[in-house]
Length: 221
Image 1 (cartoon, rainbow, N blue to C red):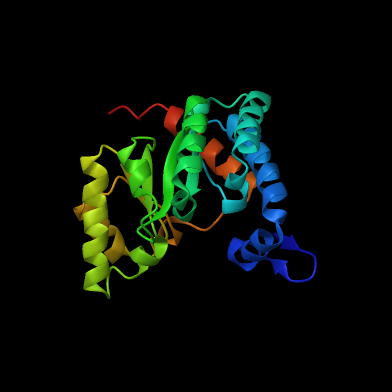
Image 2 (image 1 turned 90 degrees about the vertical axis):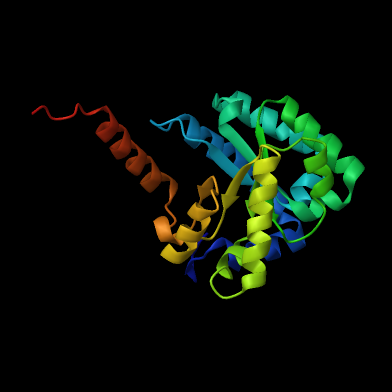
């Protein structure tokens, strides 16, 4: 958020208050529409991952309608959109699983955010509703210093692989963490180690550069 007085604020500086006051619903709807439009125009068909808040997920019918509308308006292929659902929401199993199944019917991918922070996602795993799980960034941050957390992360990665789910680690900050995750065959990694957060226009420029390099013919000997 480019605050007029406090400058550029990271999500952690304002999202908790937005969730508390209910503004996260309107903010989430704007983000969903804007991000889908931007991703549809990317020169490289990367997957778009959007994290949903608990308040967004509280009204299942409205959320499904919003996602369907965003896909139709933007023209983004449903298979390129991945929605990350907060694990805490899945404590209300009947409502949540019905909602996940409705979202899944749209053709989008679903993953569980911050897996390892609670036990609510186990029923969703058993029901085979999810496509992937995302390891809690707090767990990743303690890989180098807490053997117990490393053992938990190793078990969760193994569980995901056994169930045929894509496992992503968030918040990777050091080469040691990356090497450890590679050794455990974690499917995807994300975090400050790989680059700073980019604004939409900067990301579009980067993707255009990647696309031009990819299409450039290799030099001949």
